[in-house]
Length: 452
Length: 176
Image (cartoon, rainbow over all chains, first blue to last red; front, side, top):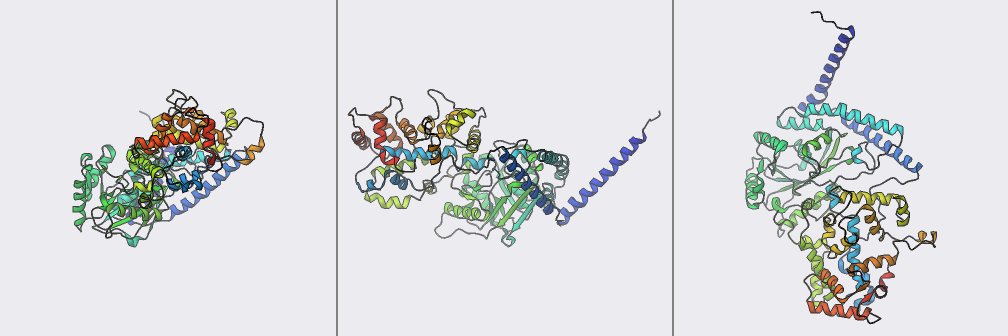
């Protein structure tokens, strides 16, 4: 049988062969070797800086384009729908509403206009509230050439579109396959994580490494995405705590248990707080075991705020090492909206973003002080993490992502208002102590973590 | 949507903002909001008058509100700017004037839309605001006294005009 081949075919094969070889060499030299040796080439920082310049240029083009059409560019932080008043206490606002003349009266007083206080607060919360926006991706001020993070995408200019098209080509054609290849490799613990980090083109800056968590302690961090684990594990070994998942996550979990001791719970056991606390306590008491990594928020939040910490890990009584993680949203939104995206589609999104840039701050270790209960301790740690990461410190429970708010908080509001109507002098002292500024302040004294 | 925008006097970016808010509340992604969608806002759910406020968005007897209705109701609360008043003095009262805000609040009381707040309706709202912390009798006497003070034509209920006069102090404040 005669094989009829064109000379061009031969040439093509050879070219293909050469390019594949070159690619693999590059892959090996630039990704795997440095990962094994723990050395960095500085390529990624250069990449990052270039990307930033491109984004700024792109945003400028969009603004110019919008100005030409005589419209304002949609900026996520414009206010102006309602002139929102700074939060003050219920009593103060109603006093203001009524005018100071009425404060001289001593009998219970009601004004028809009191309704405006609730009216106003209600409508303000419809237009914008502090809680629900934490459960969806953060809105960016400038566009980072990912359609998924832009509400304003229009055919502004040819140049911009070409750039965007090029971006897609690069991301899906080059970065994604490269990362898939790297991602599916080795299981050796630290090397594995380092490869992951490079695979995601994660540029992580660690601050204050002298405060790194030590054995026999608990490391707490704010939670944005499962990638948090990769980021922290890149710099140290931790034992993880969490629910046993099915599917891809479950496989990963089982694989991990083989290499070091992690604590995985069945869902039914999570409800039994004492069992959880006991297992954590045992692990911590054993000084040879790695520090435990816990995310006390209990769910992924979108990295603009820190929500209520569940008190469970703070009751154990060991040293707590707080860690603050802040992602730079310009390069790719790391937030995992688990009610919207499954794990696999989330990973795909991650791998096809530009990069994952984040900062990790190790805060000095904290211990529970005399006379402080678990909830207060948790709040103190949360405040420290929020302050370091530049995040908003919220009292609301992350569980509100899926569950409804409890009636008990409405009853608080009602109680406050009744005091305004009926309050007399002996209630005054109690008012000053129980009312913490904003109505939300009262909720921290209750136990919002009950039953969790 | 362009025509009604001019009536509502909301700027383009404000409308975009509201639309983005509307879609984030619309979990069912069917272009309308139901009462449950509003209830999901924690700060609204703990507001004692939350249910009534939510009701104000829904037209008579309906369970869904679309974006136009959503915008319309919220436009009541846009802050009044002075330059707008001078721009078109002959146009009909802009939706967000003080009177319209007062009407919004009046309708929170007046459930049966008979343009009068009866003693019962007043009691209902009072009960919603104080919960279980005040006894029936005390609440009753508060209601009676309020009607006494506000009612000028002696029909034992509060009309819209009487309501405006009773909230007189309020209209002087910029809180509105």
